[in-house]
Image (cartoon, rainbow, N blue to C red; front, top):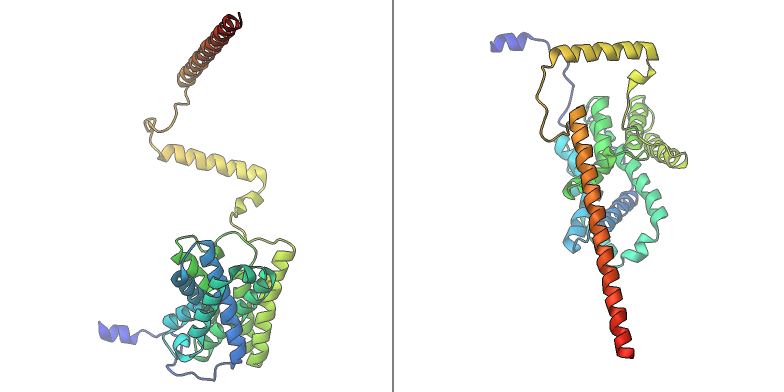
Length: 309
């Protein structure tokens, strides 16, 4: 059996190496720190909105800024772990979280500037995440996925830790889609032999451009797609009738459920009778209450006249 397995050709294997086949793109440290600080601001402001303490603000800031890279490094299991290899990354996230926690009002007023730098950070993270997978020989689809994880994985982990559906999975303007498009642009340009620096710039421009277009023209990610609506009406009606016939033949008759109202004629008549009886009972109660109020007012007037006399 082992010999038979060894004889099977590894057609779908990917030539992944334990060492980088090329140098990773060199991003200036100050650009990396800007991305970390902006992402940390987003996490700390979210902590303030959720009424978390300083520890929660620091944790969410670190998740937003460094969680995507940690998710990428844990998935690839090659090369260095960024959060450990860059000594200034974690301190920058902690200090930013402490500052935002202390003066949140001043920081929150710069919401537009934060939004611009936030999508810039997403594009930069997407480029570096795709670049690491690319230099270690992974396939293009894996490179794009790692760029996606690095760009929006931090926000996804933040929402998971808060116990809510990640924002990137809900209907909204392009955010995760912009990160995927940027990572795809980087992989396409870098694989074509274009300079990695130009590819990084293109990734950031594509990411920010798609985000701006979606905000400018209110383009939302789709949530409900039904291609059957594109079928002509007569074909759709015929298909619906066929499906209904199949369902009626396959589904046995079931007893009416107790948690659902009876839709038969007798049941509707009974519900109407009960409703009318309830209305009459309430009207009679209101008439009695009004009569008692009139009687009390008359007694108070008589007593008042006696006192006056």
